[in-house]
Image 1: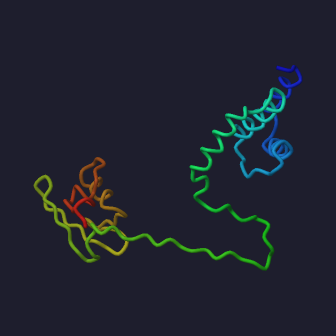
Image 2: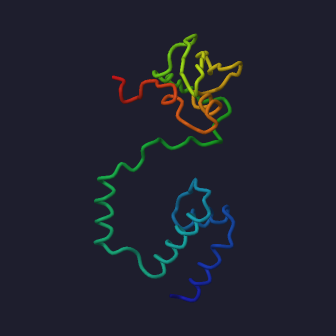
Image 3: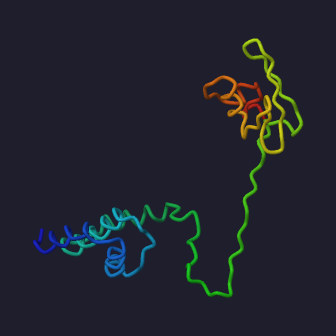
Length: 165
């Protein structure tokens, strides 16, 4: 390995992320969105070594192209630039989560006999009421009653997801 290359590779770890991004752009001819210093150091070091010692063989390139053709490389579209024109605004869509079908409708009273006592839990719109307290989940109710973590659906013997059709 060339002594100049050894020094250049050692200097990569002392560079800031901004400096590494500039070096990446100079070596690869395109900018990167990555801010991961370890990844940038590895990629820049690889490119420097490939230029100094020689790149991939033709056979390796052909195999890489075959693999790339068979792979789904990108599953999500690239993010838009942060410096979009001031007159344009992106629409945001909110994700609506479907309520768990195992939970009965609000107003329902769940009963469970536990250690000689009958527990009554009222299903609320956003939570569960038990013994004058409101809990966010059935598991929180079960933990308050038992003193240890347990699955609220199992504790109150509600049907499992596998049973649903």
